[in-house]
Length: 513
Image (cartoon, rainbow, N blue to C red; front, side, top):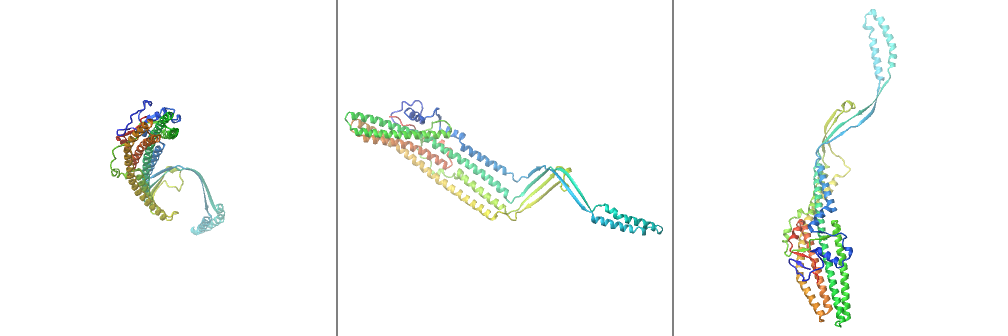
C-alpha cells in the first residue's frame, strides 16, 4: 500500500481504474475487477470529504435533532419557572341563579304587642278628667274585647322566598411573599436541568461524530482490505498458471500445482468475505448520511511525528459533556435538598379580589377584598424527615459521581494517548516490513520460475505481504480511531479536522503488480 509523504511506493500503478483518485479509486477498481454487482449503488456515489460528511450529518442525524429539541425544552422549562415570584392574576365570570327563603317566628312578638296594648289601654281612663272617665272606660273595654281578634289576624310566622340570577365577574390576585425556599430551589433545579440537557446534547454530538469517524474511515479501510485481498487472489492466479506451465514442462510434480490451486481458492474465499465486509461498511455510511452511496475523498491518515505530551491534553475535564452532566445532576440534587427543607417552613402570601359588577352581587359579597396570609403545614401525609434524608443522600451520591466522572476522564485521556502513540509507532515500523516483504516475494517468484525455488516459499512470501498490507490499513484505521477517542476524552473533538490536515502520511490503495 503506498504511503504519501513517508511510506514506501510500489513500482506498478493501476492502469484500468480511470480518473478517480485516492480512497474513491478502490471502490471503482473493485467494481471493474469483479466486485459483486450488489455492492455498487444504482446511482453514482456522492463524493464527500470527511468535513463535508460531518456537515451533512449535522443536518440529517435524528439523534442530534432529538438532543437539540431536548435541550430547547429544558431551557424553556427553566424560563417558565424563572417568574415564580410574580403574582398570579386570574379572572372569573360565573353566572349564578339562586333562591333564598326567610322564615320569621312572630308568636312572641304578637304576645308582647298584645300585652303592651292592654297595659296602654288600661291606663287611659285614669288619664282623662273625671267627667269623661266613664266614657273612656266604655271605649277601652270595647277595644280590649276586639284586640284578640285583631292580633289573631297576624300569622304566628312569616315566610319570604326570593329568587334571582347574578352575573359575578371578579379579578383575583395572589402574590407569594415567602415560600420557605421552595421557589429558589425550583428555579435552581430547572437551571441545572437545562445545563444537564445541554451537556447531553454535547455528548450526543461527540458520540455522533465518533460514529461518523468510525464508519467513514471504516469504509475506506474495508475497501482497501478488499482490494488487497483481490490483489492476493490475482497474484495466486498468476502463480497457479505458472505452476501448471512448469508441471507441463516436467519441472514440478502435480502435487505442487494442487498446492497452488488450494492457495488460490483460499485467497478467493478471503476476497469474497472482504468484499462483503466492504459492502456492509458502504451501507453503514450511506445509511448514516442518508444517501444512496458515498465515495470518501479523505484517506486514512497518520502523523509521523508524535502528538504533544499526554499532560497537555489534561486540564479540560470540567468542560467535558459527561462531567458537565454529572455536575448538573449534582445541582439538581442540591436543589432537591433545599426543596425538602422548605416543607418545614411557613409560607406567606398576599391576596386580593375585586368585584367588577357590584350592582348585581349577592348581599354578603364585598366589593373588594385584600389581605395577607400565612400557611404552615402542621401534619403532612409524607414524612418530611425521611424526604429530607433521601434528598441529602441523592446530593451526596451526585457529588461522588461528579468526582468519579472527572477521575474517569483523566484516565481515559491518558489511555487514549497511549493508544494513539502505540498505533503511530506500529504504523511507522511497518514500512521496512513492507519493503522486505515485497523484495522477498520478488526473489521467490524469480527462483520459482527458474526452477530453483519452491512453491511453498512463494506462497509463504505472498501471505507475508498480504498480511503486511492488511496490517498497514488496519493500523492506520486504529490510529484514526484512537486519535478521535483521545480528542473526545479531552474535550477537543472539534480539533480532529486540524489533526487530519496536519497529518503527513495519507494511505491510498496498493499499486497493482
